Structures are given as C-alpha cells and as structure tokens.
Length: 79
Image 1 (cartoon, rainbow, N blue to C red):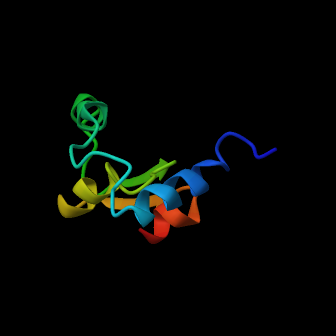
Image 2 (image 1 turned 90 degrees about the vertical axis):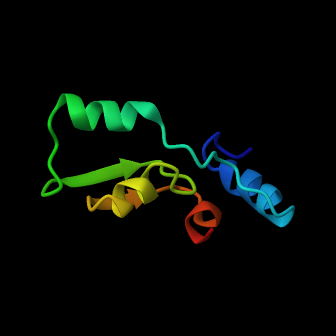
C-alpha cells in the first residue's frame, strides 16, 4: 500500500492525462500574507516544500523572489 503523499504522483498523472491541472491558477493567499507580515524581501531565499504544480512558486518567481520548490511527485514537477 502506497503512503498517502506518494499516491499523489498517480493522482497527478491521471489528471494530466485528461489535460487538466490539479491546482488553481490563483496563489494561496497565506503566502503573500506571510511575506507582507514578516517583510520578506526579494533578497531572501524561499523554500517551498510540497509545491505540487507550482501554484505558489510561479507567482513568487515572476515577482522576483529566489525560490526553490520541491515535491514528492515527479509528475507534478515535470508538469
């Protein structure tokens, strides 16, 4: 039996084979809230663990932040 998070790779694959994305195009509000609350500058490095398809990592990169994003699902990363 696969562990809970390892099973996400298969879930992502099924969704992608149907031509869909797993996540929303709208970033998670808490990410920008934390950045603002703690005055995190674009000089800081940000690590996102469990990035999935990059819902939060891509907007951060587009806004000039240094981001390292990782996920257990190779399918999500490749997407």
